[in-house]
Image (cartoon, rainbow, N blue to C red; front, side, top):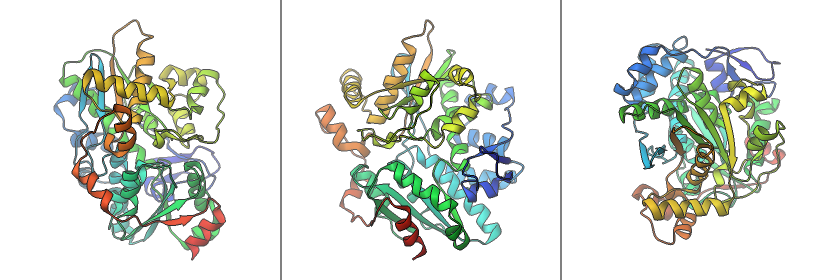
Length: 434
């Protein structure tokens, strides 16, 4: 795989260089020059394949020039050892549950694959690396779990103080070993800006082999495409013949970009719906043609509190670049906290299904789009984290206690260990150099 920078001011690179660099020197994002189309036989037989078998075939199409089939199979099997079931909660409305991995969030797919891929490359090069990652909630926990005790890799996670749930915070502040958490006095956008600045800082890049585990890293997006294929396979197993619509609750827009990669590889998708909370720069762009990032606003769907999504350019390029092409692939919708809570309560009262706030935003986005259609479709909304990670909001909204998996409840008694950090890059740089 040969990759270019979206700013077109840096040289093309190999997959290995893109994975470890994270960001090109010109502050663009890495994109593959070629996205292959999978053969018709793959889709004819996809319903007979497990998620790890699907992941291997997709990986092979993308990465076989860089990694042997034997090693690629080992990487995939090590990373993707849990399922992503599709659950029908209403007629033609399905939830793709992406919270069955170790940290109980969809980021497990990307973080575990990335850790496995980096370990493979590091074994060849005998290098040590320092991973920097900003999180608005689930990325931190998934990266902490995915890279925990991985030889040759040190991880520093930046998260905004008071803006992640208790369980999310405990997931990224209680492991120790090679994982360090920085509690930043600012927003997720501040955390993300500091990580980006670190990669462009010559003092830091000369001293450390820095890498990113955010969705700015291309190796995060590749495995996130797997579950779109797997959802299509499961719907086919259930006898579905209707066009498929995916609604993606979106913050940094890596998840939706991964869906567009799957579509570019041949996955039949009628439409993607980009569903956000009131941090709605992308739905506004889809409607008005103007992309105007704004400071992020705090909501109950906190993992989506992103005012300037870093993957916007990738999303746009994968959908065709020109606005009229983009809107032919992506519809937009956004919901405030009042509507989100109402949807959570309504679905629970009618069906007994418990949704986290992010899932509820996706539910509303899907309904907003499908209500405009004259044909029936199979609607699939992505549930990106287990509801128990947002326990206070969920129980307050539903007016009842809900079950909490033991692996999450056990975290609450553990001691948080985090280093306070200002939102000024100079302080972050001083800490890293210190």
